[in-house]
Image (cartoon, rainbow, N blue to C red; front, side):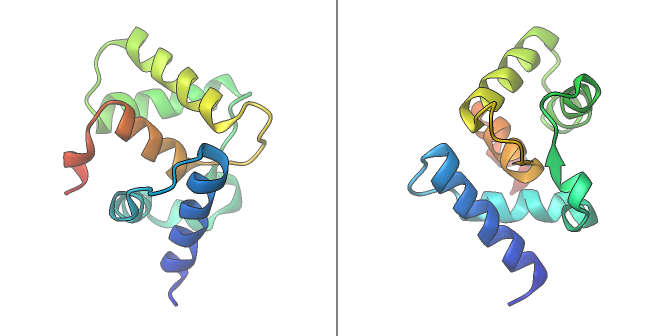
Length: 114
């Protein structure tokens, strides 16, 4: 099993256990993990600190606005808050790939990863 497969497996388990999605889109999770590149192998970069305003701002600007093409900052903020709430505010380790997966599904932008 490759390192990528191990990471994808961990993210799938996370979506099932923390989000409660019984049948997550495995292909989409794999594509987002591949798009995230080497950052998923760095413990600090692999997670999103929802208590850090600058971290949340980075997710909004670099992923929601640039990658997903959402231009309405209000909608972007609302979606990020909903995703972080769904993931669990008390959950300290929010994996970036899982956050990106949930945001991609929220905005119905799965086709960007085809």
